[in-house]
Length: 243
Image (cartoon, rainbow, N blue to C red):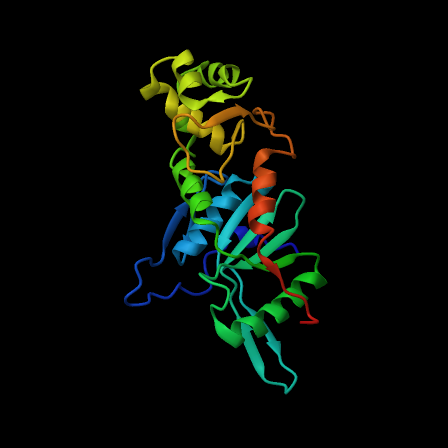
């Protein structure tokens, strides 16, 4: 429990699979200001969700290998794809399959063992299901503005929040503040941080309704990002020892 898994490098490299469009890479985390090893497009998408969740304080790719014996005494091992640390000290181990059946029987047997091990120390394990295409595309767009440099010049972030104190179409609020070329990145950064709120279930466009977020820059624990994380990672299946 004292090991900072979020600071550890991968225990093994992510495999490169010929013919796949997406391969291993690095995700720059706005939460930690560091890169996180990523093995697939599905994993990068889940890293986006965790990076936007204010409860998450650390992340790492493949930082731990679990070993156990099956019912016949044979040694088995598994390396979960990602680890996330929450502000209250809890940990999450997760795999990010590209579809529900990915990994086959071996993956599901490993999921049962890893879930039981996590339960023993008060952690959680999940197989995180792929996101809806529209939601994933919206998150990817907002993630492009996750760096703090997109807060803009002094006072602009506050002006943006004031402009959307009451829900209104995106472009109307932007133009009320100033030049869209300067203001739009600030709005997208505020949407990433949940200082502003928008429905991510429909494609983002200039007339989409934008309103005040739950966080409003205060760093509170209950935010729009919380609700997004619950709606997204909540779809990841819990795997119990009884399965």
